Length: 386
Image (tube, rainbow, N blue to C red; front, side):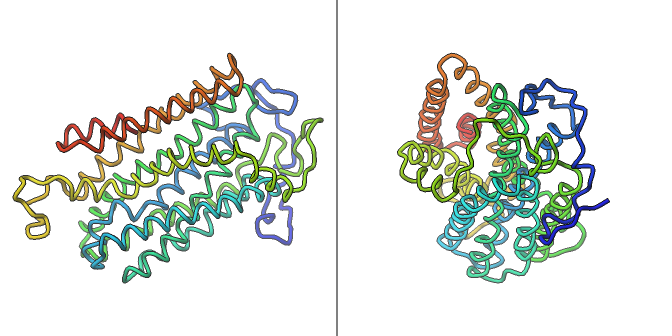
């Protein structure tokens, strides 16, 4: 029943994965699906789509689990604004290196084992966040938790392995966008878990520590499940994939070197940094910004009267902050659809036009959002900006 290999992530692979499926979707010559059937979880195409999407979603929940609890964590650990900022920066920085490493691993091992590896290894620092006692521990823990952000690579790699060129842009946008939805979900979910734990009799300090175990369990369960119940590609195992007749076997080092010295690479790096980088910043900072930024009067000081001065509680600030990430429910899918639509008319130039218009619009909305001083107006602009 099992195919064994020296490596753990070649371990416990059901032989069923080596069998050919009876595909029920239109296929191209590489067995990639030409349709996206969202309501299906049938192997291999839609099963891979949903495991990649949910894997990235859960990774976001663990990656930013600290952020919506930060008002409590800050008070319990005596953190400064600078220490929180450094921890947030480390959580984002770690994913940069991790993604560079995971990309070539996906080429070699396939997306399933890489996604599982990311989730099963990062569930450890997610759980260990509960033993943090000061700023140094928080910074180190968030640095390692940030490795969960590498799950984006196998998420997108999975859809590219399963879907044909006519729908792959939409598939990538849907999987990436709905995965990013975890960044909004966690803002409302973790304060709710915190309140439930408190209602069971825990103190504030114990409640936030116990709450962090919930996303750790998500990581563990999903990372294990996908090893047994999903496929790398339409043929099952990554080693059995059908490659295009024109595909070349290239040395990874030469490919990486070529990419480094290609100006288009750095153009996309800057553009992606401007959009996704801002998204990560908002996910980290939104709850604290809303919690501390809006008071009941100009003469009201939250530092002196924290219970009566603030307009929002930690839970309501998290609920409002979740709106930013929840827009991924449709926003990225729309972006993918528009990208595919304009690609049919103008090729890659059409995709680039959609990208540039989106980046410009996001920047304009950011400027307007930064000027909001009333909470209702800030909420409206947060939604539009997202």
